[in-house]
Length: 422
Image 1 (tube, rainbow, N blue to C red):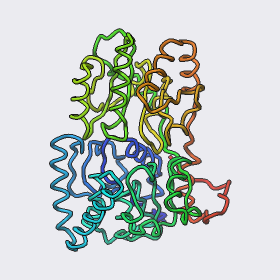
Image 2 (image 1 turned 120 degrees about the vertical axis):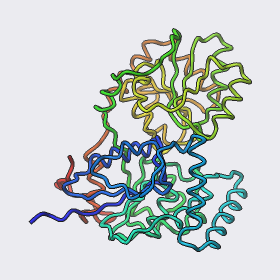
Image 3 (image 1 turned 180 degrees about the horizontal axis):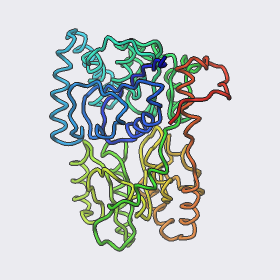
């Protein structure tokens, strides 16, 4: 008699080309389709990574827009999705009150996060399914966590935290107790765990670290494919891969590039990504006279040849969870310079497999000049970075042990448990 497969639902906000979504695709690829029946629901029903969903995963969205959420056309599609979510499932007064309450709370704290204003309304207005899943996984904070907590029927529920919770704009008021509904909460790094528990100390017993999964061999293989830099520039190439958002601190990076240019450093900085700050950044680049020095070529479907061809990889962000981009850069032997911020410092041993610098224009520029001028140090860092091996099977065990009931909160994991990994 054929063994009945356990049903696992993964929920994510969008499928845009970003670190968490990339890690999710790798996790889905590693789950054995002979053991588990896998489902994916995307709250916004949108994102350019739809084509990368593994064939054994059933997408529950009946309609899906493959436009990036960062493009003009994609943003217009999002507006329609928000309107539909407001109508679906009723409860209009609650939805309006949630948006208004979140706006007031953010305003009081000094920063309004537009995307987070609608997460609760989007979760309440998402499609609901009659299936009882064996496990429901909220793979991102915000709408997916609220949706799994409130509207999914499952024997077990767990959630993933990918960001510095204290810095990312979430509040206990906004969450409305959603984390109480999860039996397990995974954070992607020790620092992410620390910041989450600073907000929710009562959940310490059920919170554990689950490092992002990446396929290092695939990354190395794809780095050899055709692509990468197309200009004939002969100076030092600097590379950053990430969305054009406030979190990524490109405004400070532009100031650092200005210092480098004024001090006679021959370098060109490339940023692969799209985001809501593009227009602002383009204006700043023009104002500083850096049109030929700080380039925004857009997102790349395959960024790996760029990593392989660059001289220095720069990741100067305001905060992080655990950066997939840093992991990819180190896998390909890049000399990485990152801001000394939460998330980044957990991935870099300063001076050994990367450089940590202050998040200031001067700090970034000086670190770049240091590595440009010290070829031997740059080579040592590259070698140390490429030697790093990421954990894979041990991480996946944590999820499957939780699903199969082999681990209770606070107890030591079984060391002889054999997981179903392809």
